[in-house]
Image 1 (cartoon, rainbow, N blue to C red):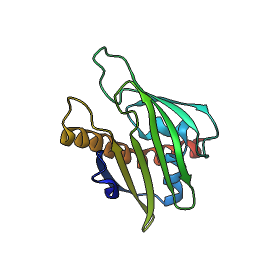
Image 2: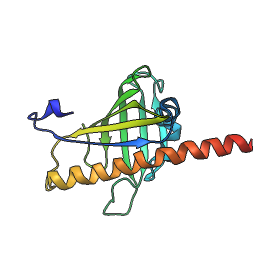
Image 3: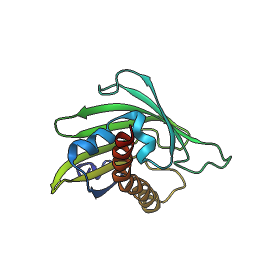
Image 4: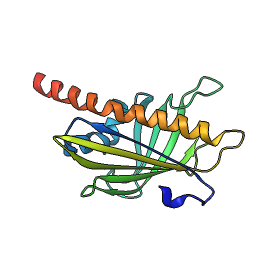
Length: 166
């Protein structure tokens, strides 16, 4: 998202290689019901409005993504801005939350990395947070999102094991 630098927003991106074919990775990350499988801090993801694979779809994500002073769960209401299965990309905008990330935009893009592996690139932008350091916030989000990328392969392996047991 480097093209937005200078727009007053904070920007970051992380990436990783998943040792699984592109279509299997897309099958995990593009389905709302599978979010808790590869996002360790997400307990629940519920569709609120629209169709999951169409722009305008709204979902509510809850869990322990960001520590809350009262110990309560974090929640984020997200709207799908775009999803393109052909190019294996999607963009969500955080519309409301109890974590201060309203207006943030997350983009995921997959690319075939060869030899049955997939490159995952997660870019994000957010409005500056009051009383927060830009570097620390970008580092924290990068760490959080990278931990999600690192769990995709495990979600695919668990799916394969469950399928073989059925």
